[in-house]
Length: 151
Image 1 (cartoon, rainbow, N blue to C red):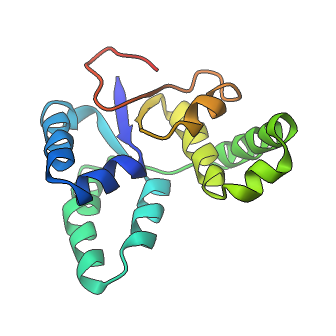
Image 2: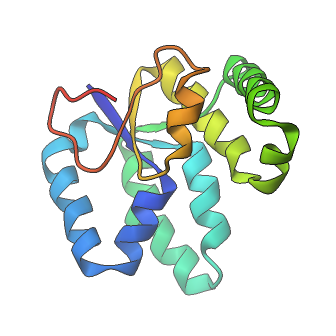
């Protein structure tokens, strides 16, 4: 099983020592199976509001995954799939839902690219349950799965 951490899991780890310990504990046993989404990198970089924060993020999160060649980016097919997912969500939940929650666009892209790579997303974001209806084969799990868990 391959894993990736959602933005909210990293942010929790940045804000709380207990959550950070949970992230490190998971990575200590699952690092060889863990990848980093380029979409999550974008979201984290957008939140790094100072030069020090950006440097720490690069050194502490991005560089280790980049050195191991464990960063994945959405393909053009994943972009198309995420657009179809957003259209399906708009048809199901109403267009206003997309306007009220712009992060849903990145979430759809994360879901489509995870599905395409066969990667399970570890997240606390409940929107992925809704998106999973439209991305067949997409797997997600709450923190912290044991090996073999499926979302």
